[in-house]
Length: 338
Image (cartoon, rainbow, N blue to C red; front, side, top):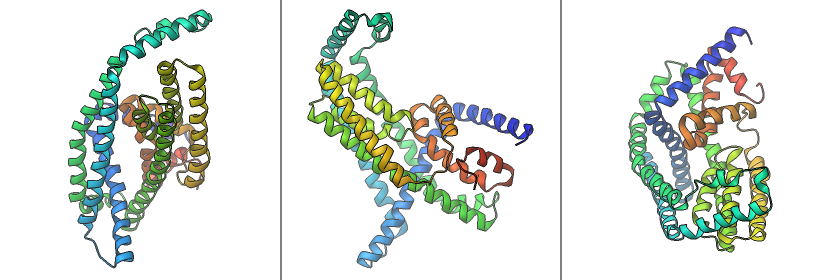
């Protein structure tokens, strides 16, 4: 790869980052809507094929799409409702958690851990009432912003054929068909596998915490589900947060260590074995590029950007692979040169 190509890639990365950052309020919901549209579209096709095969009934494309769409809205609404209910129920215990945290800091201070880490400085600003309130407000705002995503999804439904025609300006007719098919196939397969393994992760997390009577079992189970979509760091966070909270709630090292071991085991079992076996070599993404892109997306779009980092990379890899001018970038993104 020549110096000019490297400079072009770096310049493109910088310009793209600036565009993503300043266009966040439009591009983030638009990107979320696009991937939700791809998932629902793929599921609706499977629904049409299944009903035709099992019951010999042909469902209308729009009818199938909006049936899945309606189920999706119900699931999201249920998640938000459970989170809101669980968090509001523990708000009243904020002072109890606050007091336990203070006692933990004093306990660690007795073991002279302050020499290595200034616990008072790290946890001095931790306010559980404020944290719980912010999370509730965040999900309330997210529900409000979801209406914009729904509008974009309806736009994609209406403009689907026209958008396909517009893409043909960049590719020839055959390539366009292959690109769209590849995007639908790879993105859907990624979300299909990731949703299944994330669901298992969330269920295991909830059951483990529920067994120990954790006050935040439902919330942390849902968090584990969504965090599992974030590569590398998501799994670590979904282990550490429940472990730290259990230590604060129970004020018991024994229970916290057991929870830590059980959560780690479930993450290894699901993430390292089950997901790896199911995913195979589908993505063909360079781990280094994934980490770099994850960091960039986390900086410009926050948690939502980290959540979307892998499917966006898959999307870009397919596009770049089919354009002569960007094949070098595709090679850089890929794990293996095909």
